[in-house]
Length: 423
Image 1 (cartoon, rainbow, N blue to C red):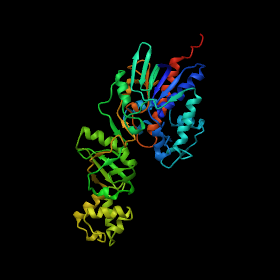
Image 2: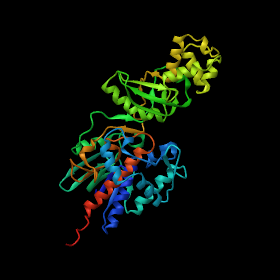
Image 3: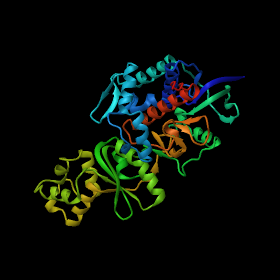
Image 4: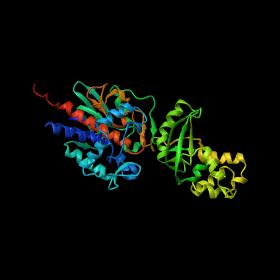
């Protein structure tokens, strides 16, 4: 049996739920009616929302600009002008979800519970007159003269409009397994040449000394350096040493740039500065100023003891040796380890551990004012399925909220257009 619908939203994550709310509210606002159904294959809805921010859900950032995104910044700017961070705060405030700003600028619900965010969204979907059906995994979408036929093991749905909000490939256990890309291709869209994990932990070779520091968290700077030594991009933030390599905000932020750059030029390297902002010259001067004191005592002024001991071991220096007892070449190696440790990155932990996807449907294949496809009439795309990814801090959620809102409103108006005022 084929069920009819005016709007079928494929995917009920952040972007899909927002699209459902926006579409339902817009129809009500213009006194129109329509059937809006969001389909999702997950047994538990909103998995990404529930695990985001350590289970607290980093809803957005207090200040969101296109500069926080890695690609397609003019397009991002255009979208954010239509629905920015302030709009997100207002939207959730109306749902009874108060947000608080932390020192990092991230906005979280005051309850510190992601469930607060998800429950509010689900209530808003119902209040808007839309519905969510799950688990209802979509396996095919085709377009014909009478609209779209959306199919799965659960049956089929005939829809006038389809909003593709499937996500990318990050965290496949949440339901984002890349199927949306295949749907987009089948409906006439292309994909970027590469689709990679982004905001993903990085791995170091077995036996690397940093892996022995598993569990240590420090504020450090990561620098992506070109073959000529040019600084390409850098991030300074909390950095976590793990049993497999490195993680933490600084690592996640720089990961997509490293993976992309390495495809273009294998000579690209990643440098770690354990003393953010310090140059080799400044670090050397600091060491020389510590007259008569043991190296471990000096390093502990700026570094955790565990890290200080590991660096001294790598430099093959005794912890009680003074700077004056240290040969110039050995001191040079110590300075290099302090401010420019070369990281022989072996790889990354893949989509299973990535927070977002880099790549997808090119943004120039949609109308930014409506998120409607320029390749397939009646189709809209929003969220992570599009080629936009931002750094850690709520920026990817902001993209989901914004594009979902724009897509939902535009689809509603396309079903029941507002009458032109009388002349």
